[in-house]
Amino acid sequence: MNDAQLDALVAAADEGVDCDGLRVTADGDAYTFELPGETHEGLAESGLREHATENPWFVSNWHYWNERDRPEAETAYLRWLEGADDRPVPERYEALADGGIEASWGELAIEIGLGDDGDRTYTLRHEDDADADTASLDVHTDPLEARELVKRDDRGRYRPLKTAPTLPTGWAFLDLDGRALARTVDIVYPATVANWYLERKGDLDVSNWTETMERQTGIYGVVETWDRGEGHEHVDWVAEACCADSQCLKRREWEYDDDTDLAVDGGDGAFPCREPCSLVIAAARQWTKLEGEQSKTYEFELTPSEKEQIEDIIDAVADGEADDIREADVYEGANRYRTRFLRAKRFDDEGRLCGVPTDDEEN
Image 1 (cartoon, rainbow, N blue to C red):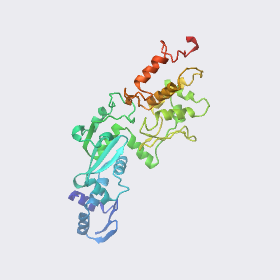
Image 2: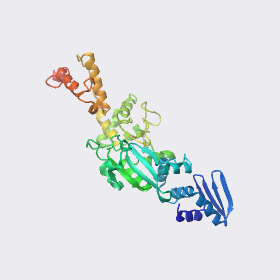
Image 3: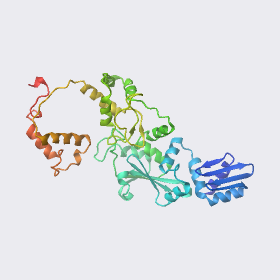
């Protein structure tokens, strides 16, 4: 706590102070200073200053949360990160001073430390780098530099979905203040803090599948035709394919319509998804066309192990695990060598499985 914070507390007493257990009021020249378990009434200004000076953590905590010009959503988010609504001031300050408080947001690891006069300092990095020495990381301090950092994953592939669990590693943002932290998080995961706050207030505007598809025009207008009066199982498939935690860190809050929930779990992410995103709509456009095809019966001759191998291959690709299977792991169905052997054995010169044509015209 510093003198400016103490002066601000005295000045604020006329309007009343009520923050995390600290209460200060003024009645003319008499002040009341209250903390959990103790109350001091009828104080002169000197007495108020004396009690405040003896409790600097409460004063600096009030000043940090109330005397800064920041949006409500940002304040709520920063308080949530350090558990300000659930942990008393002494407990939080002891944790902040002794190694800091750790929090997470998607794949982000956030460390909160105690700065001068009760200020907060924030460190931001990938959760996989949480225990790494910052000397081994690419260090940044400007939130705008996050734009380039998160464009591609660790394999250099472009990340069209910002909330996909493919955030690159190897970087850190150090010595951020609260505003800079919130801005950096918003660049990494756009609008997640704002939507999280709206949800907490009960004001999140959710747009369900049917409502969102009715708004589609142009080449995406075809998606609305996928609903052919045969139920909504196709939307369950979309949500399972695109919106699981393994594919997107948002927690899906949209359903089929206002009266019909999807059977697929929405996920466990901290921040909500309020409507089908552009990637879901783009994928649904393709599936709308593909699902318009009539089913046909094909007959293939496979050994039991080969059938199971095809299932393993589909699972590995769908779960993004194919690249993790080493060449030496020949016991894995999706192993590259085993897959190439299956192709050599079961594909004909036209690349058809077991030589079976896809269309009658190929016969």
